[in-house]
View (tube, rainbow, N blue to C red):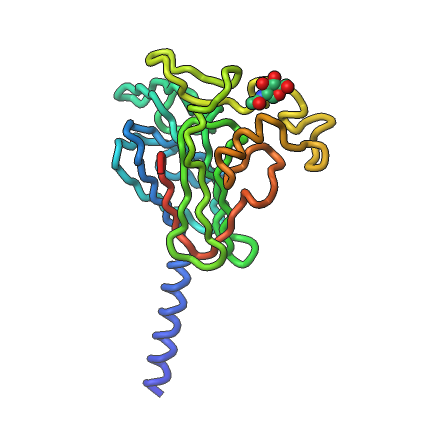
Amino acid sequence: MANISSIHIIFFLFFITSGIAVSATVFTLHNSCPYTVWPGTLSGNSITLGDGGFQLTPGASVQLTAPTGWSGRFWARTGCNFDSTGRGNCVTGDCGGVLKCRGGGVPPATLAEFTVGSANAGMDFYDVSLVDGYNVKMGIKPQGGSGNCRYAGCVEDINEICPNELRIIDPHTGVIAACKSACAAFNSPEFCCTGAHSSPQTCTPTNYSAMFKNACPSAYSYAYDDASSTFTCTGSNYLITFCP
Ligand SMILES: *[C@@H]1O[C@H](CO)[C@@H](O)[C@H](O)[C@H]1NC(C)=O
């Protein structure tokens, strides 16, 4: 009898610990850019990761742990200057002049978007989106996990090929800091998927979204881009690299 109880306890502990192992997702944010970035984080629910934002010097990594059901996004801010109280501004991705974001960043910014493990048998959904434009190369690499688990990212420098009418110029350096979406640049229904173009059937690719898609085939290029831009994986952690 004592043996059976012990076995039950061991199984019980096994299920408890394996439950903990799959119920949290670890995001490792790594800066491979030759310049400092200030990642911003925005949660779709009340759990804020990394205080909403922090500095990440070249070569540095930070790990953030999200509970099951977390959804949110990460992006890079560039060209930031913050004082000791965390007030200041960024050339791209700025979130209201604070280091610790309490809302999203100003477009254009490349986004890494996640929903981790609640519905659909614990599956995670993730994508890299250029729907709000582009500022920095980003990649999402699943670590472990089961299922499709493919690399998602935008590893081409879109700033280099950004047409004049979409460019954001860094006022301090004069270099192209980001590339606007056609929606942000022209604010018209066909680019923004609004009005008569508010469904997947009526909002089709444009020559601008095609430019983003050609450079970064695995990233979302406009609001109703095809499902090939969303990836799934189960029970994984994720390496998010800036300038992979
Ligand atoms: C898209 O088409 C418009 C209209 O023909 C043209 O003015 C614009 O330069 C094109 N943009 C790109 C990125 O090809």
